[in-house]
Length: 141
Image (spheres, rainbow, N blue to C red):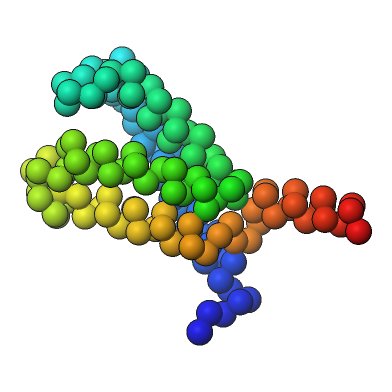
């Protein structure tokens, strides 16, 4: 049975964690690998180098949206292809375990499951979208 008193806080915790992970990964691409280096790496995988810049922007925007609780369901689903792409192009051939050389795909799979959980459970507590929608509904009443 779902505890309706605590479930919104579970969604909040999941949103904050997943959003923070996306911001951390975007920061890695920005400050450690650099955008140009990330683009070069994407090119070495046979991907369009410009996709690296789009990925960085999506990770930042998506991470911030998840943390804020702004359309979390949609954002969570929209971010899944980034992780699937990382599995297909980099981590999949390394095997399942993330401790394998070149990192496996277990962490990314768990991350995807977390995003699916957010898509199913919704925004949760302290979500910007709920605050905005709530104020609009109160003003209309």
